[in-house]
Image 1 (tube, helix red, strand yellow):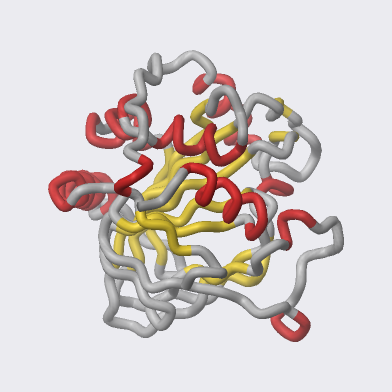
Image 2 (cartoon, helix red, strand yellow; image 1 turned 30 degrees about the vertical axis):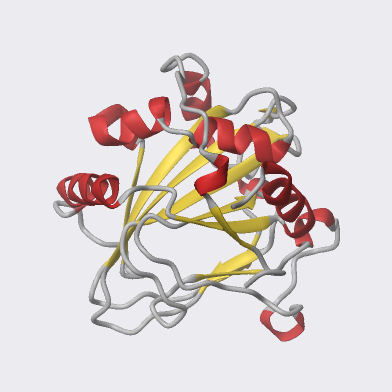
Length: 242
């Protein structure tokens, strides 16, 4: 049994946690089918990754997750915020052509948002292994103002094998990367970004202007009649418990 205090303490200390079984097997199958419907017609990027944003506008499966899942309250609770506003979503498919690595980085410097209460919930829709391009994280770097580390000088990184329905939840200021993967592997993942009560629009130069419009539209959407998370059924895995 996992208490909310355990989840929050691990998230605040390390900047990342993994929760096993956030989605049921049935929910994973529905979301994966919807993912294939939306992404399969698209051409992949030269990196081998096919991706799309704004799924909640286009498909009821993703809209239901944003509006009626436990995600908003889970994000709010971990950030110690009275609420969590939906920022944007992203669906990605890594196809059989392989995937080039994405270097160490923080997300928030690229987004038109300011504030400390900004987090990501990333859900695996297929098994994910490090050798298939899984995410790696540098725990605690969300608390540091020093420049992000490079491969040569990075502290001990952590990563997890993920099963369908498992999720990463991590701070937008945490240093992380995606490793390269071998050709022949296929996987889908669905990511949502959430803003706490201290987050505000900050359309500074160099940020992704396409997200600015997304944020404005997303302040009035769906009423977020979210379910209360079943805290006792969530199984925490953190850098200290892995």
